[in-house]
Length: 239
View 1 (cartoon, rainbow, N blue to C red):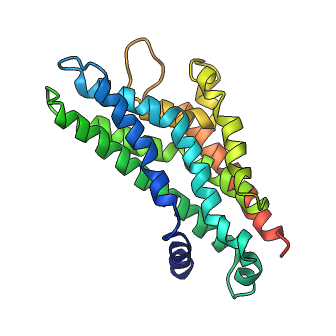
View 2: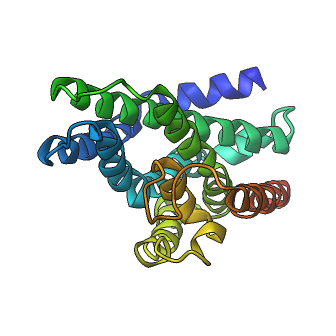
């Protein structure tokens, strides 16, 4: 597994993916810099604004871009045949690529959180810094991408087109604009989970951090289904 992860790193470290990681955090930072900030609720407001921009559309879409990038080399250079000709298990190949995608999502979350904190400090936000709130938002958003990473990697493995995984995720992410307002559908819809789990809880809103229903059904359930689907597909993939 270590060798597979190192191989993924070598294939992707010189690509343009590093520039893509910072796009969403920068946009969130610009928005956080432009809005008026109330006194004691400053940190809550910053995280809510930045999290809305980052998690509603950009984070789910970036997961698909990362998944497409980790499969791009194999599709372009007949790499699947070369890879599967070596004494490696296909299931481990899928797992290595999946962990690579999650690594990029983690880095994206680190940059987003750092940008929001940086904006808050530069604007002199009053009150004690809410460490717990930011940690919940950071890990909640990352956790919510687990099933999305599995599905988009599954699509990226099956289809050679770089745009396939991105297109599928765009189609499934756009309804977020409507679904996140539904107390019935949103907790069960995997693409709404980054938004619901990154935003701090506010008055008169059902969204905010980890909810048991979302965790069990949309995240854990989606992860199991999509990950198994991806494993089956890579086992059956012709080269």
